[in-house]
Structure formats: structure tokens, C-alpha cells
Length: 279
Image 1 (cartoon, one colour):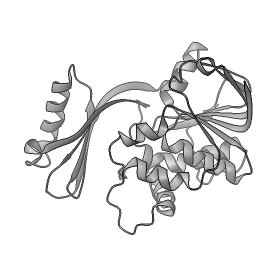
Image 2 (cartoon, rainbow, N blue to C red; image 1 turned 90 degrees about the vertical axis):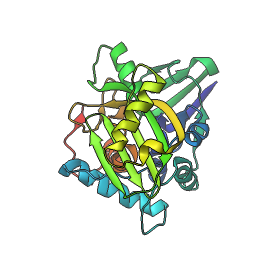
Image 3 (cartoon, helix red, strand yellow; image 1 turned 180 degrees about the vertical axis):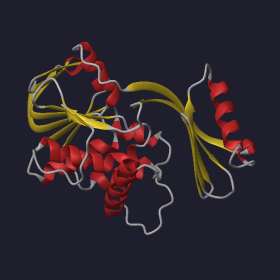
């Protein structure tokens, strides 16, 4: 089976929906390939906006917040579950979402993506990969190293009373909003070791964390560049574009990055001067 679209978006989770909206606003027909997008969002932890000290990520964060507020009408931000933001975005997206449970089982060529398991080929003017892990794997097969590092993280949501806070220890992240705490740390040798490590880090900002009830725990992979900055660009094929390196800060950086990527793909002036474009 052969399908056609103007813009084909592969991966990216919530960012795929927002990017699709932006392409539709430019009169394009959009198809998204995702791995059970709705189901995966139901299992994820909360979204937080992280404040950054450096100017570049700080600007991306400020712009992403403005975009977020245009969909979630709240004056005071606490936290939001990914599925709630998805529902708001989906109201504004009219394209095709194709659930493909094995995104690695496809071949990507100029203007075409073949999904072997589904016996389907999609031909598109623009192919946009928003999954940093996926684009790294694909480019390495073509002897191109994007130089983004892939790491395993354990993620945990729990409840505890105390002052709102945010702490970052090298690769470990703690965010507290109201009574909800989100902990994320590099994966240890076992599930138990990872939880112990994350709880011990949490004690540094709130002594009550250690006795708190774990509401949700999951493991995930993330890609990051050594400088902590994301990248977007165009490599290998003239119509193949990518975005990578959110470093677990997808909601804080990714909404504005999606806007910049769309402008870059369509050859429009960028809203902000972004000097991490790879071509």
C-alpha cells in the first residue's frame, strides 16, 4: 500500500502533534508515525517547566511556556499530565496518526518511508524525525554520527508535603510542585538500586521524601548532547530533517524548537537566532 502526504513526522511524542499543527497551518497534509502515542502518554509522569540559568535554553523555555499557555489556559502553572496536553493539542490537529509498534522496522529513503511490518510505503515531500534515539541509529547506519549520547533513566512520581523546589545533580533531576515530586536519575544495576539512589537524592531537598509513597515508576531512554543544548537540522537527504537532544526537558524546550524546526524546513526566517543547526 502506498500513501502520500506533504509532511511525515516520525516520533516526538507530544511534540509530533504540535509540529503537525504548525505544518497544517501552512496548508500541508500531515501524517504522524508513533508507537501507541495515546497509550504511552497515559503511562508517563507529569510535565514540568524547568528554569534554566543559561540564556539560550532560558529563551527556548520562555517561548515554550507561551506556546503551552496558548493551549492550557492557566494563569498559575503547577504541573500537567502529558495526556491532558495531548487532548488539547489533538483538538487542533486534523492529520493522520499511524500507530506503528516497531519504529525501528522501517527503511528510510529520499522521499519515502517503508514500514515493513505493515507492508506500507509513505511518500512525502518532507520527512521529519523528532526522536533523537531513532535518528542517531539511522544515521549511524549511514556512517554519520550525530554525537548525541543515549542514556537510561529511572523516573518516579511520589507525593510529599513541603516547599516547591528544583534540584539538578549532574544527571539526576528532582522537581517539586505542590505535593507532587518528580525524580529522575540515571539507571543503576537494578530497579531497587535506582529507586534507592533517587530517594537518597530527594532527601537532600526534603527529609519527608524518604517516607513518601511511590505513585508511579518507569524506565526510559533519553538523548543528550554534552553541552546540554538540543540540535535541529538537515542531513543525508535534502528532505530529511531532525530534532534531538531534549535531555529530558522536552516540554521546557521542545515546543519552541518545533516551531523553529518548522520555520527551518519551510525556509522561513527563524523567530530566534538558533546557532545549533546541523547541516
